[in-house]
Length: 82
Image 1: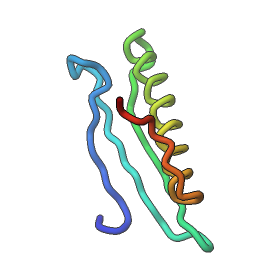
Image 2 (image 1 turned 90 degrees about the vertical axis):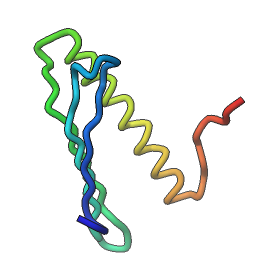
Image 3 (image 1 turned 180 degrees about the horizontal axis):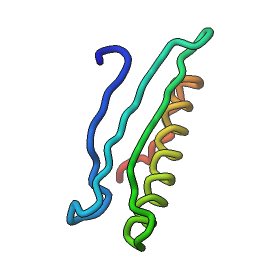
């Protein structure tokens, strides 16, 4: 949905054995915007599923922190490439 929602799939393992559906929605909220992120399902009953879930948490925490730094403070925290 333009200007509101985008969705895609992501493989969390090199062999594409664990793939999740990701939905990111953006809505007006006060003087800013509210971003909601859904990612899953993860089969946390297996070691590979649990590791993919932990990787997803770490990845999304990093990405959302980078997004906030850019939007709120105009700072680019991405590592520079050598």
